[in-house]
Amino acid sequence: MAGAARLLITAGVVLVALGVLVIVAQRMRLPLGHLPGDVVWRGRHTTAYFPWVTMLVLSAILTLILNLFRR
Image (cartoon, rainbow, N blue to C red; front, side):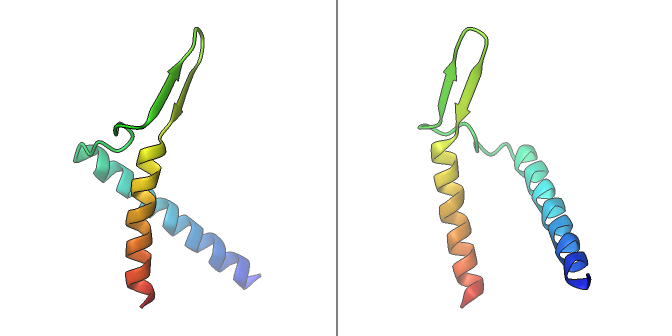
């Protein structure tokens, strides 16, 4: 049971940290989500958004950061 409690606490801390990062990114007006290559499809009554390039950039950055911590 203690393992589940630690997992929930860790997940909560990670979610709070992600929330803070989103708020900071919005205040810095970073173009994440609006990069060239991100696809927006607008139909009559629906809109679909596929942030391909944004996800590739974030993946590369997170990979570099995690590899630095791993060593």
